[in-house]
Image (cartoon, rainbow, N blue to C red; front, side):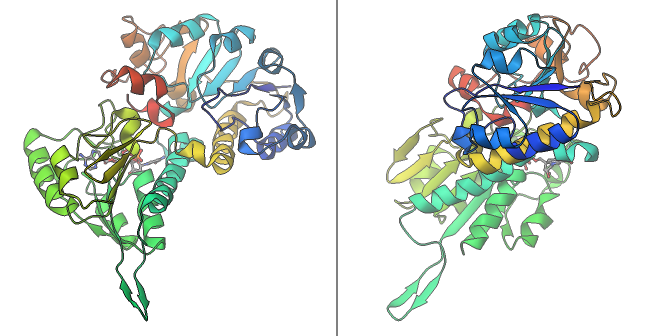
Length: 413
Ligand code: NAD
């Protein structure tokens, strides 16, 4: 019978790796689940909720994980947690695979199998396991809600006896999962929304949400999407044309939400200081790419910067600020991932190491790094073929972002 352990997260992480709802499902599937006391409190799940769902409550993290075949975490746990685990047990979480390679190596050397959920292949079968999507979606929503709360004017147009309140203009830069939800949320709040991206596939999606698409639509733009659906680094010429278009547009915007990311690269700089200076005082930039260095020139990760009356927010864990929903979706992602690896007859853990999803997410096995990107960062070769196809992304833009970077870490620093 498979045993699952859930330790508490660090002080900066309100989310939790399993919720009572998923505990119930796992117990029904034949698992035993042990949760560290108080681990769910910041997501508003009490020990009682977990017990009612069928979990045992452990006094310490070590007690929660020592008997487990699989340990579920949100962030990369401290080394002591991995040391308390059984050799060969699996640690599944957002392990931030491209920062602190030495720390990751130390975790690997404990003999625990490491699975980084950020590396989940983006194939149809894995959609329910895609933690980047589930968390980015909530981040996109929260970005708009926070921007609206900080903006000292109304978002919707209001026609009153005392005159008309104009609708606010919201510009979303980068229309991936977070950007799409940001557009939808801003539209629901009544703003006039425009959006830009370098991937042509996005144009229709933007229009279907009632927003206007703005982009330099040249030949390069038409080829800008990778087979994996991600953006490519654009040429210097394209970037120049894009900057001119954005500069012209941004000066009339009230709120700019930036989410632009390119796998393997630092976040592209899309909003210069001059563009910020062109915006009206009271305008807001919400830079979701802050964790990767930021899309705006003046973004300070984790801080609110102010320049000539424009406030630039650099939030680092927006999904963590909606922890109840974020934990629920995240826990379902993890459950969906582990479920196929529970033997239906013996109910024991049976990882199929040849499975595309196990291969894609595995970082370490039997004490050795098996992911090429991580191995390259450590200056070596992976121990086996697992995950060996990909090329290492560029280094993290700064130590600060590297150490604090939350969920999106998997795709690129
Ligand atoms: P992301 O977080 O990597 O990037 C956010 C957005 O920034 C992307 O849309 C990207 O094109 C854009 N961007 C990059 N450089 C830019 C620039 N210079 N200017 C403007 N925009 C720029 O993206 P994501 O949210 O992970 O989504 C990427 C794609 O993957 C989306 O099409 C999404 O629908 C798709 N997706 C597929 C699956 C699946 O099939 N399982 C799951 C999730 C997402």
